[in-house]
Amino acid sequence: MLRSGLSERRPIDDLKRIEAMVQHSNLIITARKDGELVGVARAITDFEYCTYLSDLAVDISFQRQGIGKELLRMIKMQTPNAKLILLAAPASESYYPGIGMHRHNHCYILDDIADLR
Image (cartoon, one colour):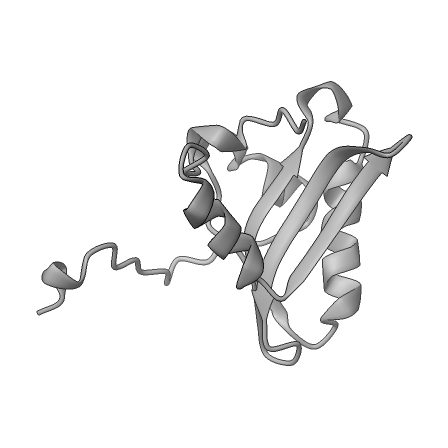
């Protein structure tokens, strides 16, 4: 089982929702060691203009070995013309600039349709 800390921000107790999240993603790359899942990158992409990275998770015991960076490289290889876009978890904000990603200041989020004016 992948132990990455991703469960802090994902509805892991809602199996139906997790299944839908995976089912509706169109690009998933995994990292395995001896058949055991140690990392995953899950994205939604049009393969030409933008790729939204929904999840990047590496098992805690396998972190700091370049697995996350390699998963991102593999996503980018599948979508070479598309911009790779993500929302960083607070604990991961320093990771992404360290591997060459750039901060973008023009991101907006709408969580609830009732907030739409």
